[in-house]
Image (tube, rainbow, N blue to C red; front, side):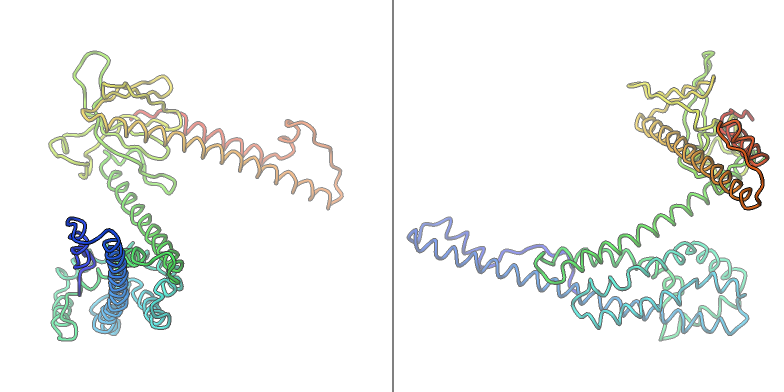
Amino acid sequence: MESLANTPQPTLSHELRALFNQRNILTAKSKAKVLNALDKQIEENKTKRQIYLRNKVVEEIFTSEVSYLHQLELIMKYFKEPLDSSDLLSPMARRILFGNIESIYRVNGELVNQLRIEGNDIGAAFMHLAPFFKLYSMYIYEYKNILTLLEEQSINNPKLSAWIKNQESRPEVANRLSALLIVPVQRLPRYRLLLSRLLSLTPIAHPHHCSLVEAVREVERATAHIDSLVVEQETQARLVTLQQCLVNLKPSIVAPDKKLLKEGLLKKMSGNGQKAQKCYLILLSDSLLLCKLTSRDRSREGPPVKPGSLRCRCVLPIGKCRVQTVLGQGLISLSCHTKSYTLYSELKDDILRWTEQIQSAASQYQDNMKTLRKKRSSSCHSLLLNRKRKCSKENAPTKEIDSPAKRAKCCQPNGEERKDEVNEMKEKSGKIKFL
């Protein structure tokens, strides 16, 4: 199939036009007529060329989709279905290995049907099915586990490994299982590439232009959703690794409400004139950890991965952190309560990125706390109204509540419990912990 990246070649019309411009071989009137005719021919050739390329892209979208559906059929017919009816692999392992491949197969089978129904209106076909592309997120999210399982089983399960090799060598398959399993991961980026190329070859006045624009938007939205899930998974996996790196697994940094924002190595200047020390910073959504590299990881380059390779010296509540850049010197001044630290890096851009990230994290944390206080205040107000209604229904004597003090007294003991929760949260978020 011809490549989509085509370099325009000079045509006979272009060459004749250049010749007439260079040489005075016609009268002005004749020359104008000839040049106008050549310009019209050049434009017609350009339009024909664009139509030709557009048809080639439409053809590639359809043929590649049929081929992709065939690859999914190979996975199901020659691998998944036989394994489902055998004891070579446990049910849990089978669910991990093939994920939701059946759901993906059904969605793409319907996409092929829509492409046949809509004909050249590719955008309309994709608009029908693009919202279901988010199903790919489940498969892509587990793809690393799929590869890990396949590798482990090939080592620890010789019988299964021999069976897979036999299936791969069949003439109907003629492909490795690992090569087939990666195909769904590559499909959505391929859709985005082909649809964007088709849109670039479709004039605005074309009847299918609007549907193509919407289709590209829907595919990009689904791709962005999947990318965000993958990044979140990798970030959480890295957070678990960092927890293992901390000596005695302290402090605890793995929690549903904690997110890893940034990590890296800086140098901390001491106030007594001693040599600067390496300091490994871990920025979380609610705190900043200042750690020291232990002897296990000092000689290694790159992020720490060995258990016990980091010793946390202190935990700074991010909501109380203030950071300033010392311009021209690659330094940042970090302060929290009465403590202050001077950090620097040989890379000035690195210092700027750290400054921006810490400031952004502190600002986001403070906004979240304001929202939480509003929700708690609204909840307490709702509780008061419910208690008053309950008292009215029971015909119990009620007193008018005027002041905040009386209002707080009325909602005891729940009011005290909520106050204790807020105070406990303030205490947790406002103190520096030294380890």
